[in-house]
Length: 157
Image 1: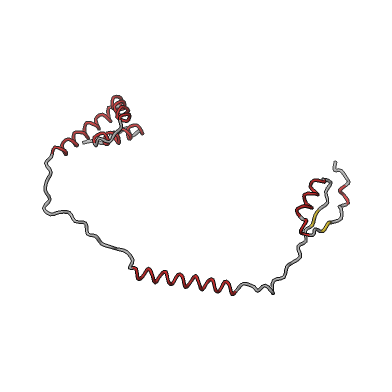
Image 2: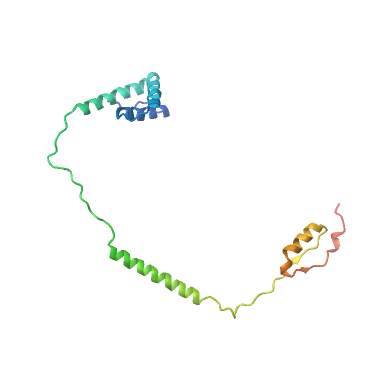
């Protein structure tokens, strides 16, 4: 019995899924019309639909057999005990506190910090707007103006 047709295109794969959904009564009306259109053109999928629906009819017609004993799924709790989790959380909080204390103690004191003077070198330029922008940016930084370069006036050829 060959259930999977050799043509493995996207339309055939979708058609096989839809055949299964139609057998279960879960296929929309639009999808049923699309499936009927595909089955009219594809002989392999039509054969697949006939085989699968025949198997489904046989299974649904077969009498339901009684089990010798009921199926039981044991309920096992394979978790980590709460006591182990609480000890791990306590150890993590102690470690975090220790890191925080060591980090705080290793910070330099405010008396040992000295503010380094900030020197910004501003090159003079022929553009007034750029010069103004640079002056505005460096207004609070006390810029040091460098003397103009000698070759500024010469034009390159």
